Length: 96
Length: 493
Image 1 (cartoon, rainbow over the protein chains, first blue to last red):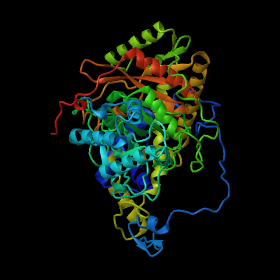
Image 2: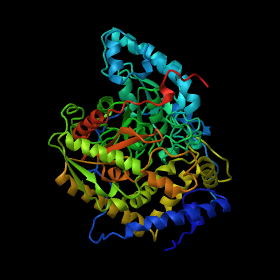
Image 3: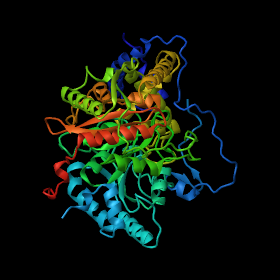
């Protein structure tokens, strides 16, 4: 069964600026993969709970202790662009 | 004279303690081996000889001063390049992390350093561990040491190739759908994916968080178990780290399999498995029975759908995990007029085709209107897979199958067809969905002189049983062959 994919919308959601040619290529590959993946619908799963995680654990807590964090300069050194003690990015206001 | 690069870890550890060789001599032998093999294989992305020699000298000095870190003290090992190393570039095989020098060590790295292990460098991988051939690396493929026109498997192909050829005595990899076991199989070495949560993932660059697990590679079952014992244990830095007592691991290596119940997975015995691989595994089932095990056939009906479920769950989790690569805090940035444009251009430029494909697939599977049909349904199938295993383990102690449906395939053969590449994981992914331990042991060469791996699966936290059977398989197989590249006749290209 053909799968309905709005590939441009998916790419936008994924923040991937892909060319129309690339989008068409991925569209066709995703069709193939999803047609195969649709087999998950073939098994009877009425009343079967989903498994999101293999360990039966809920929250993990650590002691609330004051500790040194990573060195700020060492962390900021990895940034493509910094302004003093901050990461610097292009303008955010005015985006659609 | 035998080459120190060909020693097993336990032989090297004995040599060091008997005063026959120092860590520096062993490390130098492994560096010399890499000098010969790297031009053929490209197993490493970063190989730091000076740091390795300094660590070896420090290990020798510590031992002389009475500070003995145990079996891995002074042993040269390799790390898959998706584990963070403070001060050493860590790329995960991706252009988007080119030049990234982490400000912290992964917990596994810290544990190895605490034991005075010698870290040689960072090994090649499929970008962000997504792939089964190491061809998806942004830095070029790794080649199989048994036939350099073939893939080493993946995604931990660099670690497997390095151990197989002696440019490391042992290594760490990560396994999300088979990424330790399948390359171990294709390179003729031992590789184990432990129980989910047993090894801390703090500092492992995340791919699919409900599946990822770090594990060991070595040339023998005993060395593999010993390396696992170094890295296991609860870690406060990993919220998913197992909080119970560490289970026994290497305590039954000499016990043998008499009286054990071994189940052959019916769905992984016939169709889709190469004839020579299937025949080699059948011969091993017979040997295990002759050694006193009760060998029966067991069915895991949902396992045939497991591959489909995996290729929805893993990309869905990846699409969320990889959102952090946005050109702001580290790695590549491609300029744009707005922050969103900068991010979208950075990601399109920085991610390779397979990673982009999986991000798109995962984003789609999680998007409104499709979530229930794909991701939600895959999670229910995951429950069925776990129920299959639970039912099987009522009847048997361990399950066995081939590790990979084929031996090493030619470079380039599957890159144009994602589905054919995904099929390489058909025998391994169910253990990840279940969260159970699973390992691959080399048992034979096929008619093209390529290694065949034998997979052993055990219930969660039953590593002792897995290694008990693995040690018997190792004894029964008597697999001693090494790739020609690891022999002294090979001279630098």
